[in-house]
Length: 219
Length: 225
Image (cartoon, rainbow over all chains, first blue to last red; front, top):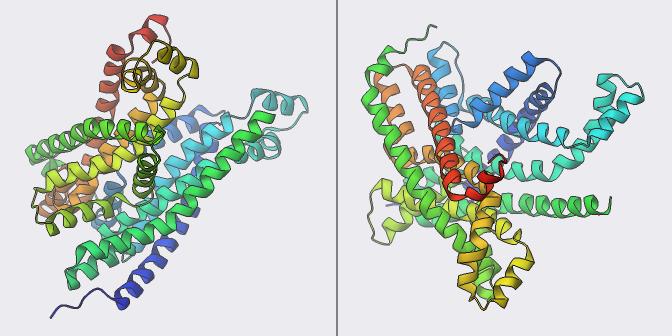
């Protein structure tokens, strides 16, 4: 007597979707802070900071997120730290997002025209003042469309947290599939919910991009 | 709290087998995905409205859903249609569908970046649409977006780790087995992390070699690839 896919399952999926959104937000905030530090290190004058942050980016970008997640979830307890699936997922997402956003924001910072850096220097602004009053505000403008676009990647990649047993949207789908044996409809609904979460972000990112391109042209 | 890698290195044949499966997945999906992506880009630029809309829907549907869910959909979808394929075949299909959409977007940017004068000149020479794409447009288009394509295919290789979730014995799948047998999870995942890095470096090198052969004009000009 297996239950068929019905309203109660959709409700369960939506509960999972709430956790997906929560995990995405945590990953974006944690990874954003990490990415900011990494980006600032990458453009710093200190060669050690530059080297370390560059090594971090190169390493993380060459390793699948799933492996980072397994290392956190299975590896850390074996090293003597007890860790819940949620913490493991948040930690690995933060590390992963930090590397990608860090490299992307470094590009946005360096894309600010050189004349702006020089002008700030001529006005006798200190290094910090130059960064916060002149460069970062312009870099933010460069970076916004791509950052919103990357949020789509974050939402999609939270699905990997299902592999470490965190009951978000994909895991909820797997659990329902285990009881109803109707995988096709279950995962179609799961895909639809992801689409509903991601498509608006993609569309906003695209609109911001065209607007930025228009702004660049008139300048 | 000390790291001991010897139980992992004892099982090196499994790691090598896994790495070979990963490379096989990446290579097949790169070739198939590039073909599908290019066709999709051409379809999207076509004047036939339903074809262009269909390609746009395909791209948006794939780019806004996680790869893990796509794998499950292909895996269970094919089996509910009565087709029982091996997990590796399913993975190659899913990876191809996934990377095809991303490649389609990249190739569309490349094709649109080819100067309108090139199209007009080719039309004046009486070339058909297919001939224009094949002889005039495609090569400079690929050349222009080549760095993005390289990154996308490396991301594809990394994404193939997700297929371990439908029991493909790729690098991650074998690592899951090794960590269960050796009780050394941290060492296992650090090791395969290193192997993935190495595979990414190798892929970058291979793509650089391909560019050296495929785009000789650029090499003669002396600009960096």
